[in-house]
Image (cartoon, rainbow, N blue to C red):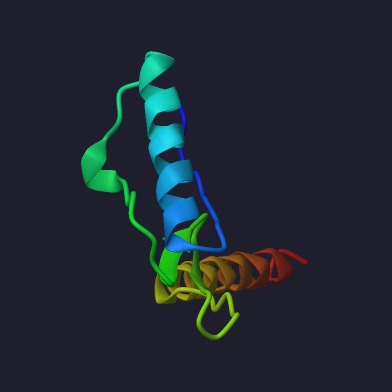
Length: 88
């Protein structure tokens, strides 16, 4: 099982060559590729490992999905913390 790969190259032609090579190597290794989850062409903005990577602005802003998760997690922690403090 492979998940979450990333390829970076200085030019479109280099990227295309790397991308084709990676795809061929994955297939030759016997892995099945979920094409609907793949992006084999270069993009300047993508979500990878839960973060949005933007090469135009050279930023890695946190996705709204991750912010929502963190808010819900912290709310849960604080709710449980206050119930523990009431035990004293």
